[in-house]
Length: 610
Image 1: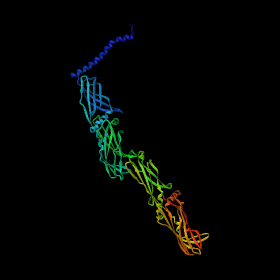
Image 2: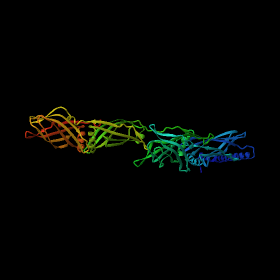
Image 3: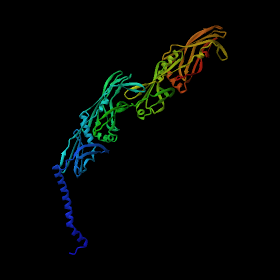
Image 4: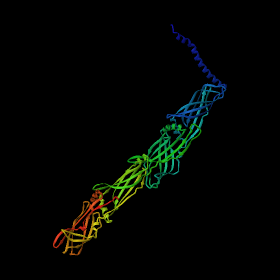
């Protein structure tokens, strides 16, 4: 077969190429064998690993690099080709963090530094944490180095160091702390302690205890506790427990909270610890839970908190340190209540609304606080010491100034009672509104200072019926009497009857005696008739003589609730109409004449709300 020249050239070269490859393999084998013989016969001294130093390298969310520097001493005056392997295993207690190896190492005469990097799975830290907690926060770091190569295969002395932490020491604190709201002490936190439970791959239990004393004048109650544990802002555990406590005023008790940390979360925390030069800040916060509408709601004030900073040197000899850090507790400021302005609202036949308008200054700027804290205002109104009605309102507040309206509903059926007292007290009424405001901060309530409102109103319904001015009494162009003086007063009023007693001195202006046979009367106020009747009299006054006429009218006080409705709707104005007539007999004739000294038509004004 006739082959092309290039192919013929390649085939011609194959025998020499095969010889070269075999030569290289043989040479390497000879070198390795020679090295083995030289070491074995003592011609070449055995290299030694003097030390292995490790430090953390780049940390990602999944792995952390361990950067290793091995110092290997070659006591020979000549170099050793790259036939050695240096390897080690680093363990914390029984958890292997990493297994590192560097092969093909060649050595120069004297001391050599070999640097290589191995990746550690961050989950190894979570595994270590379990053994560390269960070993009372004490671990042993073990590094097992070895070197191998032609004629060399030796495990070197292991390097060990102790890793101790004491994270919970900062929780053991007997210094008293006070939980206050707007400067008012509510709770004193006394002795505190913390303890780890038996950690597993899933959970690391943490039990926190604190002595609580109720310094408040009202009960303090928590239905449970919410806990949050973080390290470098990585949440290790968060949840709610039913560990509650109820303390009456002055009572003390122990709050125990069984928290659970997620062991796997320590793998998430670890990279932040490495990036921060093995420094972390731990924060433990406890919030009280209260039942609101069947839902467990977190109180926006820390019941308990602990902050600490700790440092480690897991791969070195610098040990660990723990330092407590100061912290500030979230606070709630008590709103302030301004002046209250009252006005009438809707009036029905049964009830009368009173609007109380006020401004509330809320200094809290945290929306979480404003959404949680509830302001409850209750107003109870009495007129002449007769309870007439109340109103209550619960509300949340915005930051700054809030306009708040509280509506109380007064019972109109109480009008006859307080009106009777109005008459019996010289036509004077006092309206008193006692306002109570409390801030519900969840675990207790705090009284918010609120001014009571009092006002006094007076009437003088009988002003026109009390006079010394003379009045002509007559009709049809005739003057029958001259009323020289008239007086009227209220009797002892009850919710049913308001007695009106009137008296007038009359002088007979006729040449004949006059007999007052009967007196007729009607009394209304605000269009509501309180009396419509008559009384027999029989008083006879001789010509030119004087006589006294007495009038007794029993007003139907039970109808004053009807008057009240019209009175308020008319802006607290009413017309009092008293119309009195008399049937008289003079000179054998009977006639009806008005007794104007007993009659009036006047406007009655009140200002019950001041």
